[in-house]
Each structure stands twice: as C-alpha cells, then as structure tokens.
Length: 174
Image (cartoon, rainbow, N blue to C red; front, side, top):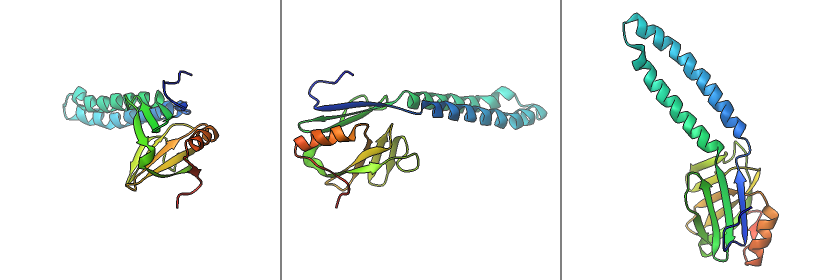
C-alpha cells in the first residue's frame, strides 16, 4: 500500500459490497422499463411522439447509473499525522479533510451497519458519516458539538498510534 508522506497511520478502504450497487442498478433498470410501458401506450394512443416520453426516463437512468458507478468505485482513506486525523472519500473529495486534535472533544468506537449510518456519505443534524467497509468505526465528537463518523478497518492499530500521541479512543464519550 502506498502511504502518503508524513502519516503515522494510514488505511485505504474499498467499498466491500460493490455487487449491491450492481443489483440496485438492475432493479432500477427493470423498474424504469416497467414504468415506460404505460407511457409508451398512452403516447401512441394520443399521437404523441414516444421519444419525448422516453428522454426524461433515460436521463434518470443515466444519472442513476453514474452515481452507482461512482459509489462502487469509491474508497475511504484515513490517516493520522502528529497534528490530527485526516480523511477523504474518493472520488467525491479530491483532498484530505483534517480534524485537528485540538478541535476534538473525544473519540469513541461505534458500530456501523446499513441501518445505522449506512455505507457511503451520509449527513444528519449535527453529524456526518463516511463509511465504506466493515462494521466498526470511530465517532469524533468536536468541541463545537458536531460529530464525524468514519469506518475503520484496523481499530487496534489506530488506537495504538493515537495513544502514542496522547489521544484515547473511548468506548463512550461522556
């Protein structure tokens, strides 16, 4: 693995279930195809050009295919330097986002699933989640009361590197 310069810890996570996005695409394609039949029948009976009805449906299908392709190719990179925690979700983020240690209130371990925080990039009131693989992660609570959730492959190694820097990963923040 190619570790960027200056990182004490670095991991690159790939989307583990890219077949899910292919399945979603197949289901979406079937649904779009089924939805087209009534429009085609209606447009032909009224003398409307059916190509005008197909164009919006094809645009939706192409956009959905593009998003599914991006998600299946996405990867989350997490790194630790002396001054903070760095992350980026490729191809959606071109540069690393940083969380300085002085901005952190605490770090706790969290469980990640498709139902809790989901996979990919998710936002809620006061939190953001960047999760790609695995079922464990960390929640970084900032001093401004916002939280960032990151999936982590090697929690023990991350915990060791952070403890060497004087940062503890708790099981629960107070």
